[in-house]
Length: 379
Ligand SMILES: Cc1cc2nc3c(=O)[nH]c(=O)nc-3n(C[C@H](O)[C@H](O)[C@H](O)COP(=O)(O)O)c2cc1C
Image 1 (cartoon, helix red, strand yellow):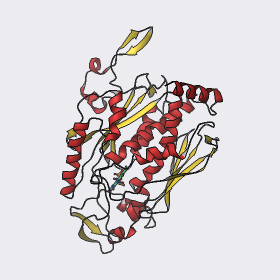
Image 2 (cartoon, rainbow, N blue to C red):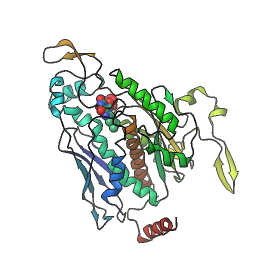
Image 3 (cartoon, rainbow, N blue to C red):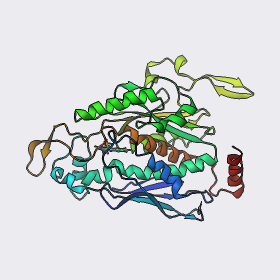
Image 4 (cartoon, helix red, strand yellow):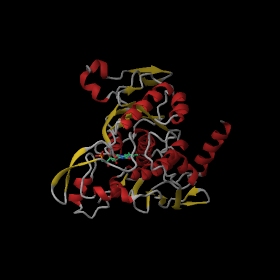
């Protein structure tokens, strides 16, 4: 598995397997001088555990982060930051019966062929959703940096199965309500209907998917490195690296294909001596550069592949057709757990791009940090 790092200046390397000793991240290129503690990362890791035990996997370990390097006396030093969590609730016996029977919808079959059976298949190994702990660690550090520069990234659930969030919600609603329910939807009534949808799929031994939206506020104009590291291309790449993500769209996305140019274009007007965009159909990116309005990206998450409903597979030891009912501890819907992962991924790419574009310096002067804390205290 030869590609475990992403980013050019804020480089995130992800390591670990589902049933190995640990999962974690090495972050190389985080500017020196950023206040950073384990609590900063822990609060984002805790968001991966929705309170309703019925809608997430019974593997409910509380992931406790340890920072092994890269900070001193509460500040980043500029050296690589290594942070990890130890895997605790590993029950590998759950997977013995499926060693030779690839689970439909999982990477079991292509991974077995590519790595000639040497890959750790337990719990999906390197292909497990568990590796996204690394994404969340990197995102927590990135969000801390973005906060200093006034950029806010928020993700939330907009669809689960056939239940959709229709209303446009305020920033306050999103900030306050997203993590107040287990499905991570900022509208409490819609959240309830979403929970019911998940529970009814679970009752039938099945699963559902959904959509996560992520918005980034206060990005400066011109963030992005066209042609091949365009802002939207870089974000899409990291989002597609999240297991179970099957689609990424910015702004109106695929709907743009049905619109006329006159409908789809976002016109410019003047407001207080500054240019302003009237709409945001483009999702805040034009030509691979941020355009000065909020960045809006949506991610389609497929239904959890591990289901107890019986499905066809082949026993690779005998090459006979057989059936499989996936046992073990699985989320009937991975969307709630994917929300903080999507937020983290967008934040990590934004920091990489902001450093590359010279918007974030490689060392944070005491002045920048001091000013930031003065403003926070005034708040
Ligand atoms: C946070 C998170 C948790 C996941 N948990 C599970 C799970 O409990 N059971 C499962 O079958 N798939 C789970 N997945 C999805 C699978 O890992 C993924 O579908 C599988 O590895 C195949 O990869 P692909 O869907 O990207 O092709 C999870 C994904 C994420 C992002």
